[in-house]
Every structure is written in structure tokens, then in C-alpha cells.
Length: 258
Image (cartoon, rainbow, N blue to C red):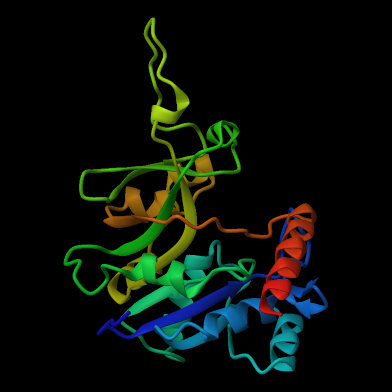
């Protein structure tokens, strides 16, 4: 995909984690999780630069062991996006579009990035881009750990929630699930430089604190968020159980490569 803007990738890798302590130092099939992410990100031709945003000397030593690059950021950053804003302010790297690739997402692909960035050259009034995927499993609609999103006619986010949105008010003839439209939010973002500058100055919002979704801060402050639809599942690692599932995926990928 040809993009005229300079796209850079920042990988936030905060050491503290309440659900999975020190997960950024863990291994996935005998290779550091962060090395999986580094290898995947640096293989994307669209990226002109890739760098970690970290807050720990231990993480720095791990990244140095496989030849990665990093910028030390504050332990007080409340989100990955705040960490991106710090990296931009440091001037260690420069870019026009900044992709936030979380350090616990080892299986993102170039296809996913191309879907994310497909309109970044042509969108005139968009502050950031992200992804959604249609929900086909009924149980996921009510799952609080899965953020849902609804968009306007031009594909800009109207709201994100851990609750089911939209709410289908049923009449005497309920709508079959297959005819309902629910979309899960895929938590990868791309920001314009101007948007990141604003994020560095934003205060937390009450919607963000209520739902524990940082993207609500951006909406509440008036950001235009373009949401492109993806057909790819994303396997993040939030818990030790997720790591076990990720190992099965990694084994299947290694088998495919043989």
C-alpha cells in the first residue's frame, strides 16, 4: 500500500499489569513476547520507524537483548496513547501518522495495518483511525471485556461501550441475532501528529473513567475517529489464560511456516 505520509509505529510496553503481572517480560514459545511484537512490527513495509515506549530498566534490558529500540517514558502515563504523546514530544522519532501497537499484541499483521491506514492519506478532518469487527458470537455481545462501537454514516465513531450497543428494543417479533449488527472494537489506533499533541494536554473524562475505555476521552474532547471494518480476529494477551491460547496460535503459525 502506497501512503505518502510518514507512518511510524510506537509500541507501549508498561511493566505493571493488574491482571497479568510483568507480562511484558514473559516468553511466548521460548521467545520474549516483546520480540514477537518487534519482529511483526518491523516486517510491515508501511512503517518508516518502529520503537518501544517503556517505563522500566528491566524492559530496556530485554529489548536490548534482541536489538530493539526504545524510549523511556514516565511510569505515571495512564494509557498507551499518553505514552505515544511522550515519545512524540521527545523528538526521538518523527512522523505524520503514529500507530499505537500494544506490546501484548504479537499477531497483528501487515494486512491489519493496511486496513487501519487505508484512508489516512485522504481523510481531511479525521484525528485518528481504529478498527472494528462484526460480532458473530452472541455471547460476546454482553461480554464486558469486549468493547463495542457504533458509528455514523461516514464511519466515524459515535460511542464505545462495554455494554451491548445498539440496544435492540424488541417488539412481539424479536429480531434474529443474525440480522442484528454488533461490532467489537479492535484496540489498535493511528493518530495524526496534531491529535497526539492534544492528547498530551487532555484531562481524563468521566466517560473514560466510567467505562475504563481511553477512546471515550478522545470522543468527549471532540475527536473525529474513523473506524474501518476488519475481517481479522486479534488475539491480545491480558491474562495467563490468554498466553496459553497465544501459544497454541504460535505453534500453528510455526507449523504453517514449515
